[in-house]
Image (cartoon, rainbow, N blue to C red):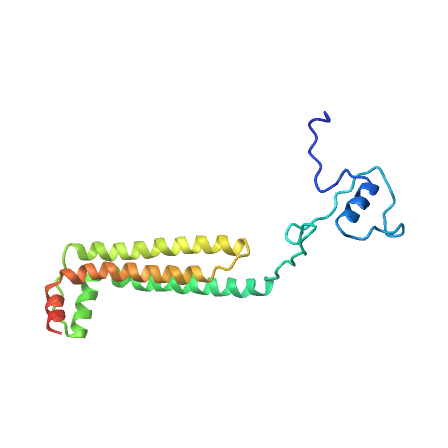
Length: 189
């Protein structure tokens, strides 16, 4: 191996014992006593340095945060919320696929009048199911990535549920804004 091709030394790994002791003394640390100092050898030793707790000479070391206790509960809550969302989407898909009949039943129960389905009614029902499914898939993928990297993910299914709710309400609002029975009911109220 050509000496020019070898990797650059890091963290004093090619320093002699005397150079290491001098560096420790310059940084404010106590020089190791001969009984504490390892036997001198020509073999370079790479010191173990934790990047999370490393500090510069003028700065105290920061302890790494231990979040292992919260990781398990975050994972359980996230999976529960994602499962709840999936059950909600699957359970509601039937009524959205038959949105015209569902709207007629709702109007009859509320005493609004008679719902008149339009050509847009089945399309909006399908769009609601597909959009909720896409939002759920995005939330599940993002949650998986955050859980895998050890970061909290419980809030992702909550945010996805809120976004999905507002998308559904907006699309249903488009249908209701076009229905004459609903418009007369709202204007009389």
